[in-house]
Length: 414
Image 1 (cartoon, rainbow, N blue to C red):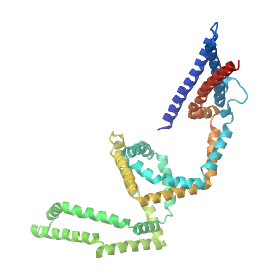
Image 2 (tube, rainbow, N blue to C red):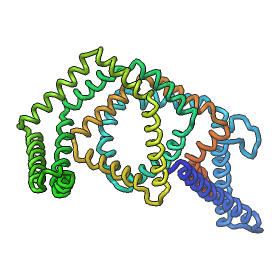
Image 3 (spheres, rainbow, N blue to C red):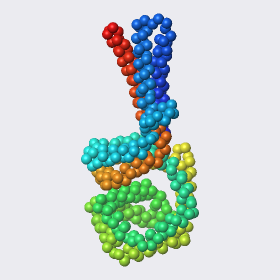
Image 4 (cartoon, rainbow, N blue to C red):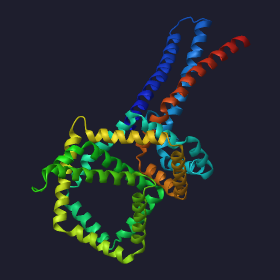
């Protein structure tokens, strides 16, 4: 639920509760006035008058008490009224200290985080298609602004200056070497290789005849068509055998390729002169006018295509983002080890943030201090005012019961 909707519901509930409490007070006043008009009241009328009188007194007293919390009753500057707006800054500081002492402590935070099981709940929430679609819709709302901002000439000039200055001294080879090391250590590179090999084998199988026809059409005139086709078939067969060997975990070609990837990572990480050369080459390539023109043209086409898709009622990008988010949720829901790691990461981040709690406390107190007293009072009243109206209702009822009880006791005493 959005904040505006929540606040509107709170205010509607406050108006209803206030109307009921005021209605009970008016009813008590009406009954009291009616009993006064009776010329020769009996015991029953006098009992009713006592009940109404006491209910009226109790209801008025509680109305004054509840109203005095948020404003001056009847607009009169009575001392010790309008308590909330008058003590706004002190209340803000007290709220901030309450958060510090009773929420932002290691002893309370760690057990609470572990009991909440954030990763499990996040996975379940993300895996629901409606939630994934909602997140995707919010992302898609922001994308047009980001895409249009990319055309700002001043922004592009700033990024060009900033990135250019940073890239002049960047050593790209060690970064790439460390990245390759991380991927190879986790085994991700083998999964990517297997997927690429499967795609290549499937492509060759599905398009074998087309490839053979294409090679045959480009044959030398002096070479017979049948021989040329057999040569092409042998080449495709050899490519298939190479793919099979690369796909086999015990294949010689696969072991040689994986070993070469590891050697390349070691060379890039341990060769500073190569790293410097690569960094300068990267900057030179980025400064090349033809490369810049190609990047600009490609980006312009991609940007226009994205904006056109985002304007469509059924955006493919939005559907793709929603499917990806839901897929992440489903995968996380089925991976207990990854959920444990995510929970541990969240716990570590929260604990690392604890030394900053003084800044959090200062921020809360400062935000409250900046609010207007009337705004602060209205927000507090909207949040808890509806429940405070029950004090008025109970005061009216209890006052009437006490008044009736006292009147009956007086009769017994006589």
